[in-house]
Image (cartoon, rainbow, N blue to C red; front, side):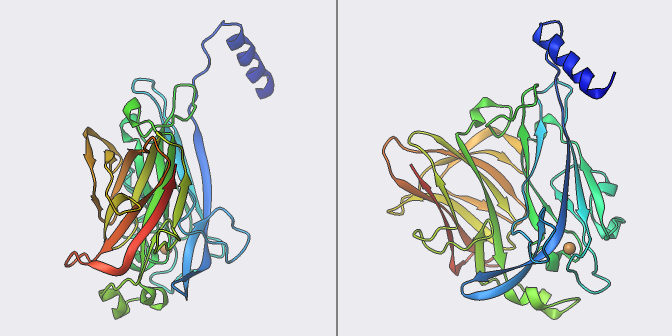
Length: 335
Ligand SMILES: [Cu+2]
């Protein structure tokens, strides 16, 4: 029997009620390459190296890289998705030896050393496939980034969001952060925190520039949004709905997240997961610090009257906690 006939037979038997609908788990094969991309930040051109699935053009890099999404199934289902994320090194911009090449590190994933993308523990830097099978308790937000000369390559924009998202036993995505229905959302967005020290973008090798970090540009999901009238990221929602945000720390400083209305009043939101694990007790707060590498999944409910709220991140110096000049980046949610 060929594959087509087999599928037709299974479908016919399922439709006739002869067998339970086949449960399904997926193998997610995704390939990314590395390409340059220039962005204008506060009027200055800055060159990045970004992961992208558009590998045709030499300037087609994305900042942040494409979303990688993997499913997890209800506990006890015995089902699991497997991610195979392949790095294609063809024509990638890179540094001179010994910091040539790139890898992908799946930040927060419990992978074996061989899948970890760390050159110091043996990862190849000329292209590889990284495999991960998350288990059901790992629903939440993750990151991926290059682990070669990380101080330089992370700053160059070699990062992207990775989402571990619940599915039902038929393989359909669920609109919630975990298998707990309390984490259900009506809308969801990725807020990828980022900071830029332009000197890092031109320095190479063991330059002393890398001894001190002085960021001057700040981003959410690769964009500056210095005022509420020019936000980095927008969402058109509806009244009395749940807005989920995935806060993903790919900045190299501190960041304080809040949701405020037009008058600057802070609105409560609830934190459901931290670093890819569900909190045993959700925390409702009006402010949340996100440090480099951290992830939080949060939900707020829009009010019953029309208006606009501004989710926002204030970037702060790691040494003394002081807010950077022009260091608040705004998102915008209308309802
Ligand atoms: Cu790299």
